[in-house]
Length: 253
Image (cartoon, rainbow, N blue to C red):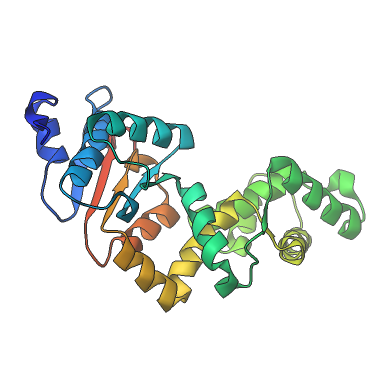
């Protein structure tokens, strides 16, 4: 068995080898938060937790790969750990269970250029004087704000009235046409992955209960950067076993 006390300082070791239950780890930049999380994953596997029942959420897929590579050097056998960004994990869930929400497994994920192209088409089709209309980037930002802040599009559009002159009714018409076109295409943008990933857990009892039972441990890096969608997502997944460890710097919150 690995002697983690020789690899970590006392505070890091206490967090990495803590027992079951919810853990909030707060530490400033440069104190080894990611190192602690890496050793936590290694510790859990060494304690007999099946790797495929561990979920590691990070803010870049590269970070997830590097963390698992480091954990593999400590304790071999990390291949089955579920890891990646919130968007990546939500996409995996939706590929498997998205039919519950009306999506096919092969749904397309729209990048920024795709979004601009679709929004541009909506503006061209619906707006009489496009030169006097908000730019497509502004409209996409409104839709994104509504999704990530869990507020109605109407309220977001109203808040933008203080920044620029616009016709709320016309803006809403175009934004809703954009959403309708995505649905017709059977496609999602990056915000949809988070929104629909959370919807999946909230609306499908079967999927939610299966995933809650499956993941014995949920770990989140850079927790100070999560939004309410991501926080709710992790809370729901960890609700069954209550083994959630989040690591972050509250000074960066």
